[in-house]
Amino acid sequence: MPSDTYMNYYELLEVSANASPEVIKAAYKSLMQRNHPDKNPNNIEAEERSILLTKAFEILSDKTKRSAYDLELQQLLQPAFQTQASNSTVASTPQYGKRKSFGFTAYVVIFLGLAAWFVWVSRENKQPNAPNLPNPQLNNSLISDLKSDSGQITLAVHESIPLERSIPTYLSDLKINLGIMYSSAENGNVDAQTVLSIRTVGVVVGAFEAEKFISFLADNKPQILMKLSEKLETANIDSLQSNMGEQYLKELILKSLGEITQTDRFAEYPVAGSNISAHYGVVEIILPDYFSVISVPEAKL
Image: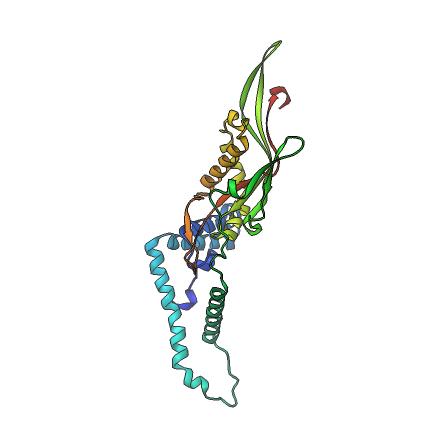
């Protein structure tokens, strides 16, 4: 592959070279949302970029094609080291009357040397228990129910939830129609629409590719909100109004977000440079404010 036509598919999708298939898929979807020709009419640059993104995803999402591409990428970088070694004697000889130029190969060698030093220093300073990994049972360990003087149940979020892996207010002011209820009145039956009202929904994501997944949630917020609202329409009214209503709602939202983003909060992925694995996707739901289930007469809707 000639260097003038070389395209780094990992850089194009804004992922690392050891990114998992799930991360590559999420990055591709996020970038295509912004560069799709349908959203950028008459934009030649966006059209060309969407073609490159599709090509990159086609290569990196196929295990066989990705292995071949990685080998080709490795071979492409090797000539730089060979050229540096063969020209070391000439480079050490002073050239009077000419100004030395710092070639591309020299920059590559310096960059790789600095990168290797940074990785070594990071490993030396890392403590064995440094990674703050999510626990699938966060309901018990990180969040506790507190009852105020008025009797209203609220949630206290412990400091062990890392701020860099959470969006305290991801969605707000949700109004979900759960269906029609019938109640008797003096003048006959009255139709009433049952509405689930949620003031705030916060999320905590796993430690694996946390920053990239939070960006994915932010970029796709409108679509996620629409699909989540559809799934919450199937919520069981009796379960919501029970003593375990809040726990039921959090579990329903957590499961729905996993299906929407195609992630499994119980799946674990290896953390590069360590023997530790971490979770990917949304692993906990935070409901810092109240939610309510009310019946509204159709005439008031």
